[in-house]
Structure formats: C-alpha cells, structure tokens
Image 1 (cartoon, rainbow, N blue to C red):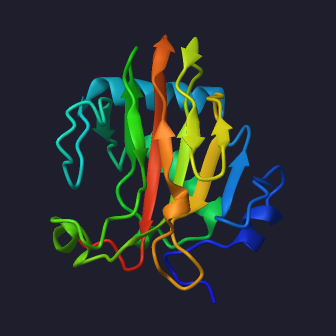
Image 2 (cartoon, rainbow, N blue to C red):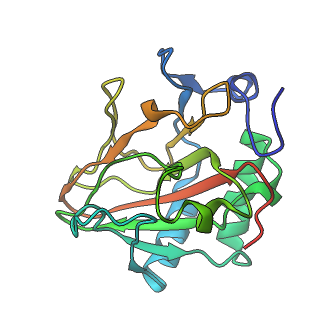
Image 3 (tube, one colour):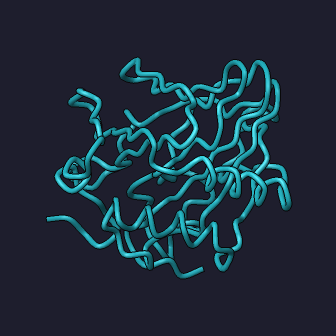
Length: 211
C-alpha cells in the first residue's frame, strides 16, 4: 500500500513518456520534456536571485564534497507554484509531505560527490532532521538547462548515467519495499566541465512537513 508521502511505479508509468530504468535494485524513472523551456528559464532566474552555498546534513570533513549553490524557492512565486503543480500531478503525493522546493546551481568544477538523499540513521544529525517529518521517501529532480560539458548524474550501484536535458525529470524511491533506506540510490552530481548547470529538487517525507 502506498503511503501519503510516497508515489507508485504504476502511477508514474501511467503518465505518458515516463520510462523506468530496468533494474531490480531501485525504482528509478525519467521523463523528458516535463517542464517547458519558459518555465525552466523562469526558475533559473529565481535561483540566480537568491542563491547561497550548499550544505550537508552530516559533514564528513571533505570541504569539496558538495560545492554547488542552493536557493530556497519562494513558494508564492508563480514559477514555483507552476512546477509544484506539475510535480503533484505526476507523483500523486500530498504536497503536505513535501519539503520546500530547492534549486541548485553548479558552476565549472562544482559537483556533489556520491551520496544518498536519505538521512543516515547513525548520523549525528539524524534526530534533528527526521524527528518531526521522518525519513525522505522520494526525490524528484528536474534539469533546467544543458551545460556545455559535464554535469551528468551517475547512479553508481547500477552504472546508469543521466545527461542534463532542459526540462527532463529524474525521480527515484529512496526506500526499499520494507521501508528501510535503499543504499542503491547512491548517486553523483558530476563536475560541470564547461558552462553552468541548474536543477530543481523536490524531496518528500514519511510524515507531513513540520519545520
């Protein structure tokens, strides 16, 4: 049974154009043309207007582990409302279970080394991040542009790499069927070699967002 903070493979695949990566290790999908060029351009402008250095939940001592910039998107901005509506229509997840939408900007040489989006139960900050809303369930990420070179997203455990394409969505279930975090969701936001990369990311939780 699908919980209120979760989507389902059946719902996603019922949407025209959604493709599932054929792997038994995780639920991973892509949808080209999810967001229009115009919407992507408006979201890029929002990210550029209010970005800050990206952070980590549990710092591992590597100052170069995540070197992008992040923007907390204004929930009342028309572009934010538009992409949130598209995400709800696709995922079927109650917006109450979603974290606020974020945008990320990657300049030349910037990356997010191999990581999982779920919070490590043994991590120092697990209680801080999960005591109210629980673990992360699903991730929905949309590429807003195509850098000249680099910037791919590589899922290490299954050897699958997604190249940035304007408006393309990639989404995955961070959990196993038994509800435990899935280590096979480890992925690497690879270095941008030329140009700049922009994405937006939407994370969902087990419980309603309460921060």
